[in-house]
Image 1 (cartoon, rainbow, N blue to C red):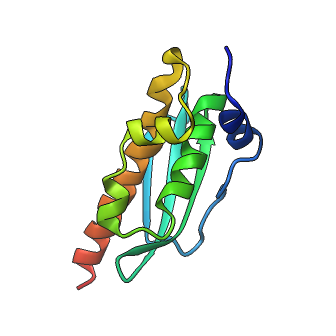
Image 2: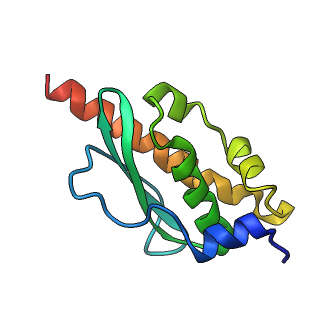
Length: 126
């Protein structure tokens, strides 16, 4: 499998990893007991993603895709963040190999679940 420099850079030096202790939105996609999974943490203030991080168990392409996604959504509004697609992440990475295109799905799915989690908590807390 051949990865380009951008993918290799994000795999070997992933951005925004770890837990955000005061996260107000989280979303998980996959199953940590049997394969690839990612958990995304969001800190949202005034409708903007002030901090984004993730924990992952996955292949190099999955790690690179979620790392890139966190950079793409940092500072965006909720609407701007959830508008980012798997294809957008793939393009920003310079193109995942065809057999790894699905790897961009994990992060985008977890991000959207984290936004829904935030909105549900926010609605409940009013």
